[in-house]
Image (cartoon, rainbow, N blue to C red; front, side, top):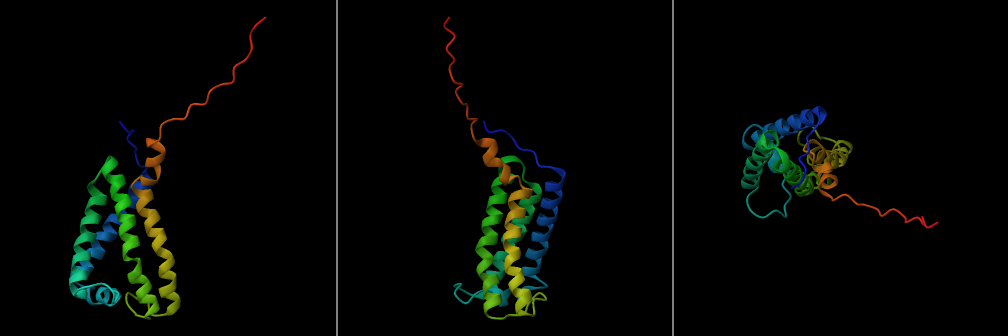
Length: 154
């Protein structure tokens, strides 16, 4: 049975902030920031941009709630899933940069470019705050090294 990892106070605070951020962002997809999120959906994404924004909003709210509520191995898996989600939406951020789309106060090329470097930070925060970075170390079996034999014959 894998050992249960406990997260530190700092990890718990980070997870609380990240989960709350996801719920607010998801709510924004559904309401107050819907048009700005539509502008970030790349043209290669099939279907209606509004449907994509609504669906991703629901997913973000679900991810945020899961971050706040899950424990143990489920929490670590959620961290990996959230990091994958951030990777999946990265093309939208690249699209905003390459197409020079102003949204969310990102109204210059420099600001849009800086945002691209923030995505790995979010991915790292998802992994750190859920203990997913620690889980591989905890689940690996201990490696025992054989001690060299000494000749005790007299």
